[in-house]
Each structure stands twice: as C-alpha cells, then as structure tokens.
Length: 439
Image (cartoon, rainbow, N blue to C red; front, side, top):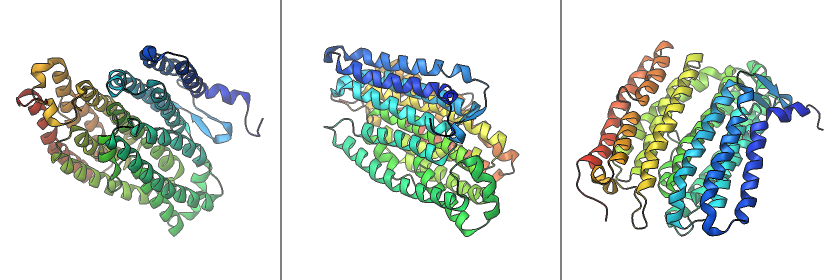
C-alpha cells in the first residue's frame, strides 16, 4: 500500500466507492437488458444515487483529513455531495420521456450522468490540487459527451465541440495558475500551500497565479467575461443535461472555488476579493441585460444562470463565515429553482416541438395548468419575489455583503434583481396571457 495511505481511508471514501460500483454495474446490466425494457434503468440509476446518499450518513458531523491530505471529510464536502446526488437524480427522472422522444440509448447516458456526479463529489472533498483536477476532468469529460449525446442534432454536436474546445483552453489556464502555486511552495496540498504563500504575499508570481486560477474557475462557473460558451451549450445540449450542467457543474465549480481561495490562497485575499468583485458586477449586469433579448427559453436561462453566478459571488467576496454560509444557502435554493424550470421545458418536448422557445409556452395554462403554475413559481423564485425561496437566498447573500461593508455590491445586486423581473415575467405572460401556441 502506498505511503501515507491506510485501509481506513477507503472507509472514508465509501460514498465514492458505492457510486463507482453502481455505475459500473449499470453498464453491465444495460448490455444484458433488451432494448424494449431499458426504461427501468433510470430507476436503477436513481437507486444507485440513493444508496450513495445513504452511505454519506455515517460521516455527518465528522471532520477528518484522509489519504495524507488528498481529501477532507467535513460538513462542507458532505453538503455539496448531497446536493450533487439530488441534482443528478432529478435530471435522470426528467430524461426518461426525453430519451424516448429522441430515440437515444439510456444506458450510456445514465452512466455518464453518474460519472459526472462522481467527479463532482471528488471535487467537493479534494484538498489537494491534483485531486481537484482529477475530479474536475472526470466531470468535464462526461459533460462534453453528454452535451453532444443526441448525435443527429446539429445543435447538440455544435454545443459539444464548443464546450470541449473552450473547456480545454480554460483547463490550460487553470493548470498554469496551479503550477505557479506549486512552484512557489513545492506542495500541492492546500493546507500546506496556505502558510507557505505568506512569504510571497504581494509578489508578482502570486498575483499572476491568482489571476490565472480566477480565470480558469471563472470559465467553470460561467462568470463574465468567461461565459461565451454557456448560451450555445445550454441551448444545444439535451434539456435534462442543460439542467444538470447549470446546477451540478456550477455548484461543483463553486465548491472548488471555495476550497482553492479560502483554504489555499488566504495570503492573496485582497487580490482575489477585487477580482471576484469585478466578476460579480459584470456577471450580474451582462447576464441580466443579455437575457432580456432572448426568445429561446434555454438561452434566457443560460444568461440568467450567468447572472446568478454573480449573485453567488457576492457571498464569496467578503471571505467571511457568514458569506460562505450565504453562498451555500443560495446554491442549494438555486439548484431546485433551476431544475424545476428545466423540468417544465423537458415536459414540453415532443417529436415535432423542441419546447424551448417562448412561443412553445403560449397558452400553456390552458393546456397544462399544473405545469404553468409550477413554472410561475420557479420564475418568481428565480426573480427573487417574496416570499419565495429565491428571495430568501438573495437576502442571505446581500446581507453577508452589507455586514462586511460591501454596500455598493449589494445595491448593484438588488438593482439587477429588479431588471431580471422583466424576462422572468415575460415567460409568465406567454404562459398565461398569450394565445399563440406551438404547432
């Protein structure tokens, strides 16, 4: 057994082991199941996620560093792992009917969803730069394939190519920044890096490392100006995958961001606070303004997701405990708001209607009142209208900014929330008032 590892380390990564075994069994079961009986594979995948979630329970309230500092078992990691499992289960259930309409094989699809979830869990628990990168690429490669999973669809193929090319480019930038961190300290363990970087505080090399890492992470969270890929990928990818990408990938990237900057780079706090302040403002303004002009609901939600990345960054900028708590609360609430909105779009998908244009929502209340009411709630929540969950999430992040003295950042966030009401209510108008219906 390698130095620094013990048998107890395998116990601590029990959830990851359960998920790995489950996704491998899924592949074997799928190959032995007749095509006409593939429908139950979705429920098998959800059962795997449920078993993985149950395996998290023994570690509640535990705080430990395992595998010689490669991973951490703590409340932070468990929160995100539970969020990832829930965020994966809902798109899988959304995908059953969607895959039938598209005529795609579900086995490989569910396998890739579970593999992406495994990568997210490794990212959330990783406290070593190499561990984080392994988790990041496990997640990213799965999403590259899933974005282009509907092979006859040219938009899906284009989404996969754009995501892959820009993702590889951003990875190079992130790796360069991490290599500078390693060069300055001689370590990849974040808890070892943090005190060693104190000696380089204010140096050009550390500042460059911070800029490069912020740029690399900025791509993953789709923050402006690293957002170029999001609208095209969100529009072209299968709708359930767009939902999973906008929630799971974003949450995993924020988990990585918090680990990197709060645990590994406290010595460069003034530098990354300034950068995240700028990214937060740009993301909110550009995301909300661009969303106003969209007639495609998936592209609108893509720009909305960019704006929400800005709201989440408001909680991160102060670097305080309350700010981190507000970030976690907001990500949790945002996950279910966004998944719910995409679930309604997935229900609208028919053989002759994509279901992602505003005109496809025309007269939805008359055709499906339950779906229209659900979409109304999700739109109000994303817009932050009281007393919805979205309103409470924004109260948390804006309150954290005000407490830390970032008054103007909170004011900009409130103003952008007001702007966002236009395009969220536009969706509501089409559902409840417009009579134009998709053919």
